[in-house]
Length: 153
Image 1 (cartoon, rainbow, N blue to C red):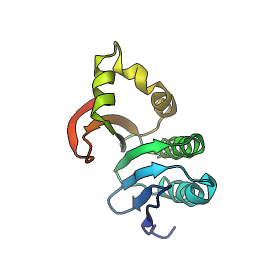
Image 2: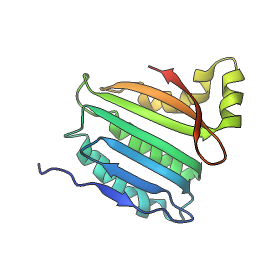
Image 3: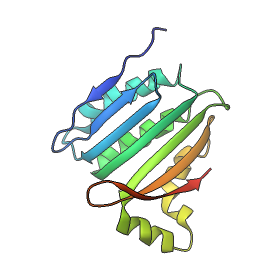
Image 4: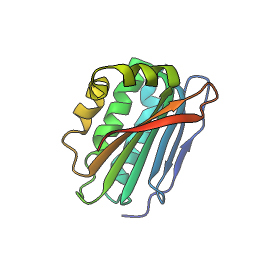
């Protein structure tokens, strides 16, 4: 198999900036995800991820800094995460980084069980072959990281 090239999809008012960088294992979605045709945006991303898991980097960082997303986007993001759990090496690590506004972060921290807030994500990641970590970041109005917490390791 030939080496993957990076996939960059520029941000629009309704779609996130998507950066999939093979050599560093950095995969990021940044912005809003409200596409009218989510398949058109996310199908090439899912194909790239499918190729990536065949020859992944030892550490893969999936950064989800999506301020708002619609239902169809959430389904595609779930598919992306599920595909990444198929990295077929238990010595490799998948780090999922989630960025949320400070107010939401504080509300979650005050809840009885922070892990319950991430049940849909942990359900996707539970049968993962690589080691998985989930890290949560609180951001301010300018998207700068104010606080962070390792939620699941």
